Length: 220
Length: 306
Ligand SMILES: Nc1ncnc2c1ncn2[C@@H]1O[C@H](COP(=O)(O)OP(=O)(O)OP(=O)(O)O)[C@@H](O)[C@H]1O
Ligand SMILES: [Mg+2]
Image 1 (cartoon, each protein chain N blue to C red):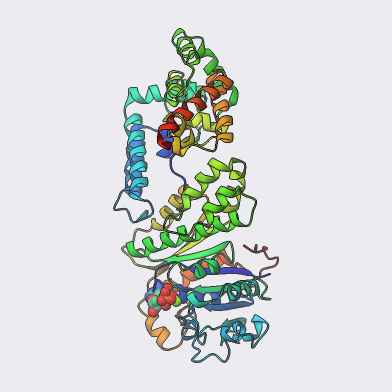
Image 2: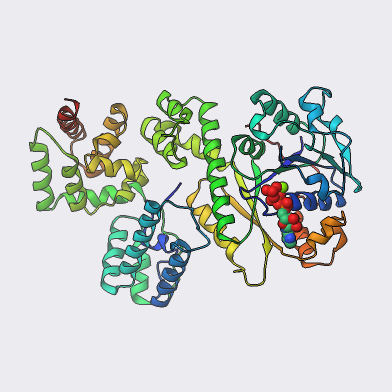
């Protein structure tokens, strides 16, 4: 079953990019009507856990889009990430009534690449990358830190690499038991490193060393 | 090859048999050669809805090999173009149907020389019922606008969806870990969503193939016993949510109005839509037939053997 994984806040609430405040309110109410615990539409369709996750995502989406400044920051992020066409927001700022397509343009590989390349020039990122590569053992939390510093969303990585969001999350959270078989893991790690523009070979080696260590005590 | 419409839905008494009989009659009236098969082994009652007291032949004679061809055990109804296969005299209940018999029956159904085949399924999610439902990739599920019926319908969909996933995995070259996981029917049995995750993990190259196979399975549904106070957008909402959360496409065929005269019509051995063609209920039925079998089927869609 599909969840809201890899969907942006507009997609979750099924809103166009230029939705106004009242449309956001309405969409939120409708989403709660459909996904709420007592809804006939989804009666016993989801497990409690699944429903909880869906409702949480709906809440996050609403609280971000309903808040002018949070929404602006989020939009900025979408544009930077190549998940939305910059012109949409530029036009919106000039004439708010301009129509926008309902769905964001698909991610273009070169957009994210360019973005990460640009970001990597920043002093903070350069230091972080050097720090990680300086270590013998690289943990998922290191990769997560780097990804977040680069302002890259898991969904964007999925768009390019097709590594599922749950796998990326498991890698980042060092969830040893949820990781794919080593052959796949190795190639996933390399693709991930490529996106984050950090030495793929070193990253894969460092992470596998971390795993070997993490698994040892459990085997005893 | 005929177009097969299995009619299931999990909950008992929602109107699967009533709908099968009336859809069959209306399709036949439009000139299609239609056959109705009662596959509610152990709970057969389609003959009653068709006004047949004791069918002269039935499925038992095909299953016990008295007759070689499934067509031979069909009986005519009082509606021209509409034939019927009863399971009234099948001694076995669905749980006792041998695997080989089931495969033979499904193969025979897929080769019937009719335009449309309607399968009236029993309640519940027994794997034999699911296999009949999956005999075609255009199954119809029926539910009523009540929480318990919707709950059972979702359980039925998930069970059919999971069984389809497992069939696709066992019939194709998936990684051994995936195959083993799909075979596991024990208490740790996988939920429908976990298989996709396992494929992602161990067999990422097969992910797209799996998704495409599941996408080919369509679910159509009818909301029956619709009353004035029911949310008129309910069916569309269910469709939208299901399309959002399942990899298979869902299609809402429409409502069928509740009509108090249905019981009397059954008692008097009449088919409701023919007895009351002007009723809202009959109009609803015709709108559904428009979508399923508009006019004489000129070229048939090939039905894939699962
Ligand atoms: N639209 C309707 N309006 C009024 N009564 C209806 C309608 N649909 C079905 N019924 C009534 O509901 C009863 C149950 O219908 P039916 O036998 O078709 O259900 P079923 O789903 O086949 O049940 P089972 O699971 O037991 O086979 C019937 O007696 C019929 O009178
Ligand atoms: Mg029935």
